[in-house]
Length: 457
Image: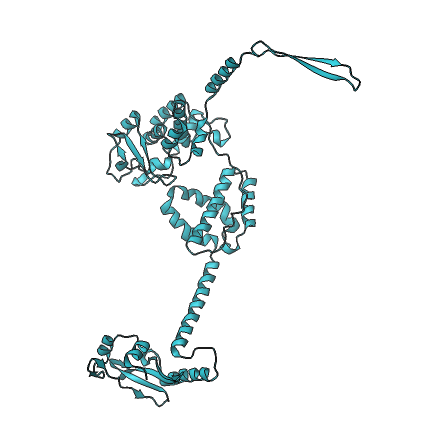
């Protein structure tokens, strides 16, 4: 028979110390090794039990039943369970009978209680995995968006959450909100795109909506809620030319600032800041006093749109404006919203002021309409006209690649006129006279062209 230490490790998974605590009256020492624990017969062949030293089950001591049998020429004893946990001699005998039958019939099933328990554990794990998979496969787009994706998005990108909610409620939910992620296909995405295009939505808006769907699927995949492919990956996205080419002249900018100073000093301060630093709205709203150095005139925009931090210099006007504000603690917002919270967008006072000045009157192309972001674009355009090269402009605006600043490489009509005038002077005036003279030919009439040019040519 197996040694005491091996049996107790297999059956009870207790250390020797624990056994001495549980069976202080029946464990006897012989030298450094414990002697066998006393076992009692049950009346069923191959089934016996041990009594707990202190714990009672009913009026008697709790009993731990075990079964004894031969396997491969060895005597095996395995624990069946405690009486307090529902084990009885009858159940232990039944388990022993099943094991012996499996051995006699040479079945492929478990041959020991340990193997049987492991098989049962594996079976339960497989069933649990299947249930979990079925639960995940039944998750609808709305489940994932509202209960999983949205809470994370509100913490990580609060400024864009409002727009994403609008896309979901107006366009995405009516089409696929109630469908499990597994059932959403390329066809649904093409339908979504076509519906938005038919409704007259701009290409950039359609691309944005599709990007929201894509982000939800990627989020689900990253968090073990989906194991398929993003259904938007083969959608042919509409080409979006969303570049704003219009910027404010210095005179127009001053008109806007003067009007804002009367209507809302907070909106005026933020507009002045953007015009003189090229900062995005999100960068302005998240700016904290700890990142404003009035002595060196340096500003630090942290966790910007491209996830990098960047440094900027303030003009004297910006410096004076910041001096006029009540300076808070290092972690306080420079331009706090209501309740001291970070703003998600500029006040509508800005749009109303632009409309009142008539700067967007008669303009339907949204790329040509003045909005708050036009202030950043104006800053870039002014800097370019003042001599800033594209590399310097890239650094000033916080763009990662030169491609992003190429849009600011434009020049105004006056500059184009000067350039063209220079080209004309360099080439000289050309006076061209074209005469068409008919000639007779055996093959028919042939037209010849004689060209007379000036000396400069």
